[in-house]
Amino acid sequence: MEKKIIRTDNAPAPIGPYNQAVQFGNMLFVSGQIALDPKDGSLFQGDIAQETEIVMNNLKAILTEAGMDFSNVVKTSIFLMDMGKFATVNEVYARYFRGNFPARETVQVAGLPRGVQVEISVVAAQ
Image 1 (cartoon, one colour):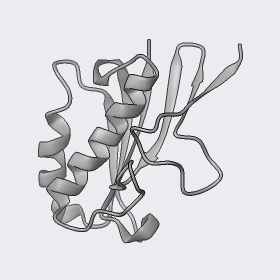
Image 2 (image 1 turned 135 degrees about the horizontal axis):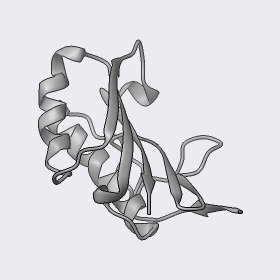
Image 3 (image 1 turned 90 degrees about the vertical axis):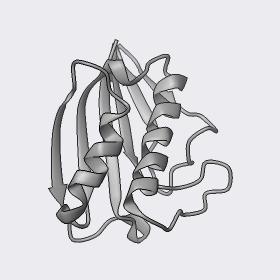
């Protein structure tokens, strides 16, 4: 099997030496997404609900480019600066899934890129 790099202009360009996603066989590994505008790379600064919405839309764009959607997601990782905001993030996150939810961990971290409040990565399968 050969790995395939997934790239779309509908999600932010990587800010380091990594790809938006890598597909290997039927598995898709999507890099952590933060609240960057895909058009100009600007950072959203505002409330955690809006920030999470942008993150989820960036993930959606990458999944779409790979011919998948949130129903293909088998695992998510959520990184939060403040676990006290978990309920708000969870509320936004839940709107993107129907029925069988993926496995997940949510952890509080000491810092995230560019000072964001939330970063989310996913693993999907076809």
